[in-house]
Image 1 (tube, rainbow, N blue to C red):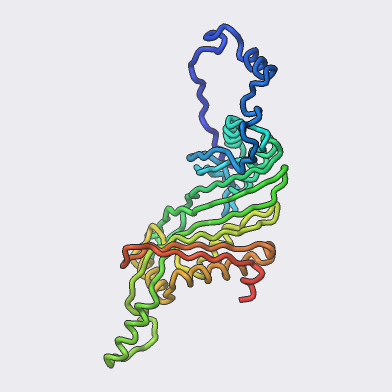
Image 2 (image 1 turned 120 degrees about the vertical axis):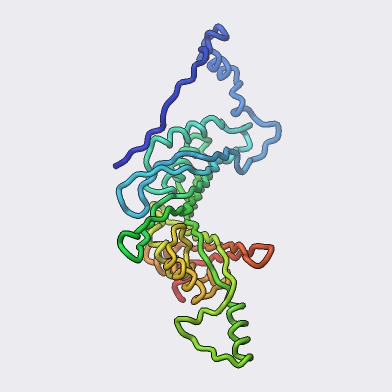
Length: 329
């Protein structure tokens, strides 16, 4: 199993006592005795603060391969970590959040969700036993096999899968978890296809549905996020199964595309034209059926954004529905 260790460096700087003539321990002890631990002071205005914390980018996190091998890989995450501040505290110890984030880089996690949960529980433990929230997202790089028209033409495509997790804990126990993936896909407009089909009909041209009849239309690249809400404690989203469900409902893009696969992708998208509204409904139902056995009390959020090719604007759609309702379809 491959391990990733961050390089270490020790900064060359003078010791505290060399500069000030007293030890750092003596100074901190005197501050504590005098009640000058600033975050622990009473605030001027006694109100609870819902959240205070940090936002950081490029945090290295070691994760297990979500596709099932025992390989460990490293990703770089964007992270928001915060905790509530009670009315009787002036602030939180921000440096403690930095300590927690730094220490977490030395561990390996089963999933991004498990990493977020570990951070949130430590924040809750160290900061007044209140509630804490962690939001983390990254792009997971992987190689996808691409079959060529003959064996020596086989290739690989470098792809990125968006991963995200959100954890909200209170008094050390998780009470709100969600996790999701983000993919890029292609859609073809059904409205233009239908208009073209009727144009041919009115003009007297024969219209036949066959393998050669995905009618002319415009297409666009989309970014679609699938998020499982209200995850049961201890459960992680089955990323490989989610991808398989997504591929049943929409056509994902690919970075390495030989000519024959480029044709196949465009053909599939035009053979099944979709509005952005079709995308979110189709994906939600497909995913609901895949996870129904273990996540029936959860909900699914699907958000998709289409980067329009013939308009000077983009369009969005969002659907949030319970797994219980989705599997009725």
